[in-house]
Image 1 (spheres, rainbow, N blue to C red):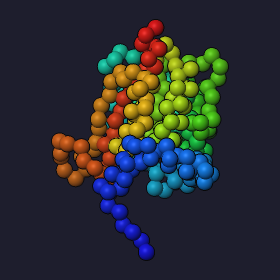
Image 2: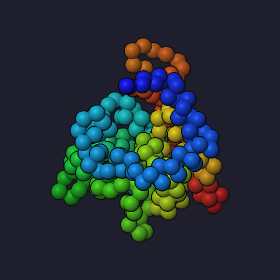
Image 3: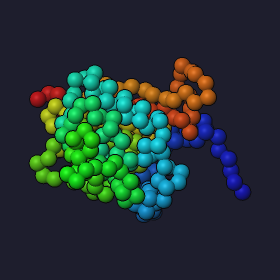
Length: 248
């Protein structure tokens, strides 16, 4: 028998899990059962990107709009990126949205080989039409390690932290900050979900919030408030810096 759970009830249930000590119990239970989530498998992502998650490759207007917002935030806070690291790059479209800054390098990392193979074309020297040196790496967020000595002005986590445990998401961001320039920023985008709320709360305990915006598409009609919508959720797009960087 299939049990239908309404979206508001499911949202409240997830809030109960991620906003209370139940989150820790839930994480320990999953670890004890040793059942890794399907999305930790590259083959799962290859199949998903060919079907229901094809929009992650940049085929949805909302993705381009969210990436454009990152560019506007960088302008607002006078950050001119020379080197960009895009974790969970999907279609690699972030480099197009940030082309206005004329960065020197863009590195896109994705767990899916299918995504990497479909990415933006470059010339024989590995550069795009704007002269940006582009490279793509097939790897998971948890295992990728930038080369020693390489630093980035922007490290983007667009809708990827959501797929990690709350504690691990924060730990991974801290790990990547070892490769962040002293004037650089972390760009994070996450959809309206109790787990995303929990991740942002944990991040803002250890990082300073530079600035951000709240965005939601108006699909069928205009509205002036955030609505619970599973197909077109609201997103927080924000910039953060390690506290030590602001204090130095």
